[in-house]
Image (cartoon, rainbow, N blue to C red; front, side, top):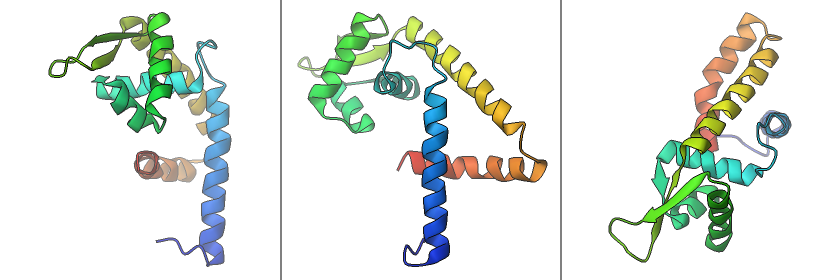
Length: 145
């Protein structure tokens, strides 16, 4: 466990935070649809992973308040990127699913961002690339905690 009273651990955590934030900002600029906010893109990505969810479930996964998610879902529905369907067990709720248009846009966005990262990775030597490949599952775990 990191000891935030120890200089090496503090430096490592600081470096990781800074690098992740800079890389995230650069990746956000690699968008295919400028009309969507980063939050809207994130919701579509979450739906791509989980398939379908209620607005409440999406709010929890995206760490936003339910009224905010209701507005986001309404915007995405108006853009033809999600569908609202009746909940199979609870008539009071709706289930949000992505459309084919959303899936195509996500695929194009992922391809563009992957290509951007690939050009960055070309600047690494074999040892750095091996370390980055090994770190990817750990970064993925951190992203989902």
